[in-house]
Structures are given as structure tokens and as C-alpha cells.
Length: 213
Image 1: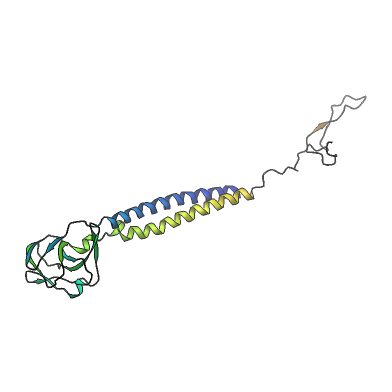
Image 2 (image 1 turned 120 degrees about the horizontal axis):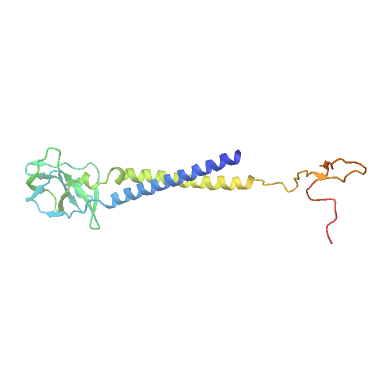
């Protein structure tokens, strides 16, 4: 019964290892593809006073320098754009761009005049938060994948150890064991009785005999 329970436990561990491992790999692939698939929309370089078109989802102003955000204020017509509290970076065509300003929730879509009080080159581009992957195609997928994949590997290791332990503790048949076999005795003289079986002789190997020369 112990061997049967051990075999069932090993099979369950293998099943968990496969499920957790495959799920972890899929989540890692989703998270990695989402992180690599950020918006690659070409940014448009603008000069102060240039007219830009604000899409419905909003717009951000970008710069190649991370320090531009700290000393730059941008306006669309007469509306002051929001300044990100922290450095927000996106990658476009192999280059890193840092968000300088973004439109607020009340910004209307359509053409507007963009003015930024900086000598650094700035670019009009996609709304910053929309360039970052979220959910399973972002940080959540990467985190869950990094958790589930090691759990699957741990279950596989436990299954291997359980299988080896089961093989090591299985003694198999005892070679010294024997089973008495009935042996027919000779028919007694002068009688008509049937021979009686005898069970006093073992059928196993004889250990009291010298080895053959």
C-alpha cells in the first residue's frame, strides 16, 4: 500500500510540474512581448508655436534628455500641460525618450498650438501612460511567470526524488525464502493405503552442501 501511495504522489507532482511550468512560460512570454511591444509611433519634432493635433487618448511631449522635464513648462494654446512626477521613458526605434509633459483629463482633442520654454529638442508623441504595458502583457505577467516557473521546477525535482526513493526502498523478493512442497513418500509394504504427502523437506536451495568443484 505504501508503494502505491508513493506512485500516486509522484504522478501528481509530475502533473503539477507540467501545469505550473507551462503556465509560467506562457506568462513570461506574454510579459516579455508586452514590454518589448511598447508604442513605436514615430515622434514628431516640434518648435515653439507649432500646431499639433491632440488625439482623443491624449498626447505627451518627449525629449532625449531626462533633465529637460525638470526645467521645462509646456502649454497647448492657453492650457498648461501636466509635468510627470517621475521620469517616464519609452523606447522608439532603438532610442530612449523621456516624457516632459502630458495633457490633462480635460484636454480636448484636435489642433492646438504647442509651446515649450526650452532650447532642447522636444517631440510630440503618444500619451505616456499608454506606452507602458499593463496586466499580463506587462509587469503582472512577468511577476507571475517568475513565481510559477520555479514552482514547477521544484515539483519536478520532488517527483524525481520521490521516484528514486521508491526504487531504493523496494526490497523485491527474498532469495532465501522458500515454500514447502508436498513430497510423496513410498508406499508401505503389505498395505493398500495411498502414499501420504510429506512437507518436511524445503524446496529452496541447500546451503549445507559444499560448492561444486
